[in-house]
Image (cartoon, rainbow, N blue to C red; front, side):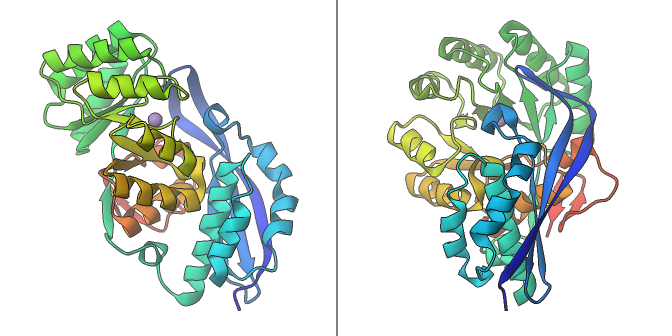
Length: 342
Ligand code: MN
C-alpha cells in the first residue's frame, strides 16, 4: 500500500480575465501542467505547475520533457516515506515548479490514503485564511478603479504592482489611498527600482501619511545589499520574493539581515524548501507571506493547504485563480469573497 505506480502529466491552458501587467511582463494566458501521482491501490494525488519563465526559467514544454525522468525518479517509492521522496525531488533544481507539484501530489495521495486533509497533515493550525487581491500596472484610472472594486468586494488587503514609472506609481498610490482608506497595502515593485529610488518612493508615501504593510522586492533579485539598504533606510517592512527561491537563498538573506519578510511561493521552492524556509524564518524572527504565480484553483489549493496547516503567514497573496477564466473549479477549499476555508 502506498507505492507509486505512475505519474500523469497534462497541460491545461487558462486565459487571464484581463491582461496582468507587472514590471516588464504582461500575461494574457498561461499553460499550467497538472500532475497526478497514482499509487498501487488506485489512490490519486494532484498537484499543478504554474511555470514562471520570468522567475524560474520554466516552461510547460520543459516540464513535460521531464515527465519520464520524474517517473524514473520516484515510481516504486512509498508515499509514506515522503522525506525520502523529497530528498529525490530536491534534485529537480532546474524545475522548482515541477518539484512543487510532485511533492504536493505525493502528500495529497498519502493524505487520501489515510483519510485526512493535507492542511491537517501539515499541522492543522487554521482552517481559514484570507487572501488579498492584486491591482496590476495600468493607467491611473484603471488602477484606481481596480483598487476600489477590490475594496468594495470586502478585501482587507490590496496588493499594488509598481516598478515601471516611479513618479506615476507614487501619484497613483496617493489616488488609490484616498478611496480605499483602512485596508492594508502590499506594494510589489517586482525588482523595478534601484535601491535609492525605492527609498525615495517609500519616504514620499510615508510623508503623505500612507502606511504600507509590506514593500515587496523593491530591487533586482541578486542585490542583497540593495535590499538591506532599503530595509534600513525606509519606514516600511521590506520583503524578498524573487530574491528568495531556495532555503539557501533565505539563509543568505537572514545572515545579511536584508529583509523583514519573505514571500514563500511553492513554485519557487517546492513544498520541501517551503517548509524549511518557514522554520528558518520562524527561528530568525522574519515574518512570512505566501504568494502564487499563475496557478488555477488546483494549484492555489497547494498553497491554501500549506497556509492553513502551518498557520504562519501574516499575509496570503493567493489570488491567481481569481484572475483566470476556469471552466471547472478544482480547489479542495471553499472560497467566499476574500476568505478561503479548508
Ligand atoms: Mn512579488
